[in-house]
Image (cartoon, rainbow, N blue to C red; front, side):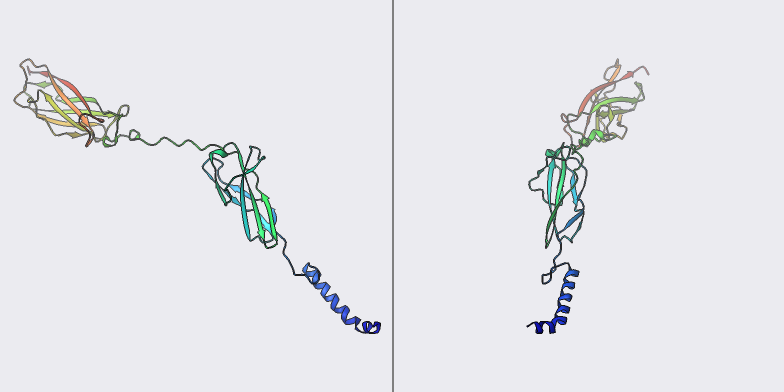
Length: 271
C-alpha cells in the first residue's frame, strides 16, 4: 500500500494543490458554492422635502455595496432632538406626507436593503423640527378688484350713490334738457363699474325718464333728460328733486345690493 501511494503521490499532490488554490481565489472553502455578501451601507439614507405640515418627504436610499435587489422603508416619528422614535403606522412607502400630529417633532426613516444573501438596516438623520402649515392667504373677494364689478357684488355689500351733478348747474325756466350724472361706490368707497342707474324727476311729468345708464370704471353714469310740460311744478319752484336708484344687472330692484336716494338741484325760474 505504501508503495502504491508513493507511486501516485506526484499526480495526487498536483490535483489537491490546484483545487485548494482555486478555492482560495474564489474566497470559499474547497468543495462549497461561491456566495455574495449581504448589503453593506456606505452612506446613510437622506430625506428631502419641506419640514412643514402638509408637505411630502421623500427618502433617498443612500449608497450600498452588495448590489441590493430591494428596499423596504419604515418612517418614524421622533422627538425634537431626533430621539425616542416610534414607528408611524402604514408609513412604508418611499414618500410620506407630514400630518398635524408631526408638528413639533422630527422624522427619520429606516431603509432595509436586501439581496439573496441577507438584509441590512440603515437609518437617516432626523429632519428639522416639523412646523405648522402656513396660513393660506384670504380668498379673493369682488371688493379686491379695482374697480369692483356690480354683477359680482353680493350682500352685505351695498351700492351707494356717492356723488351727483347736473349740467347746466343751474336749472332755469327756459331750459330744454339736462344731463344728470351720478357716481356709484361700494366696498368702502371704491367706484363700481357696471352698475345700472335709473333716475326720474319728481313729480314725474317735469322731465323725461331716460333708460338706465351703466357706470364706467370711474363709477359715473350719465343720463339725459328732456323737459316735459309739467315743468315747472309751481311758479315758485326752487329745487328739482330726483329719485335715483342703482342696482346690479339682474339684481333685485328693492333688495340685494340695490340702493335708492332722493337728490335735488337748484332751480331759478327768473332766468
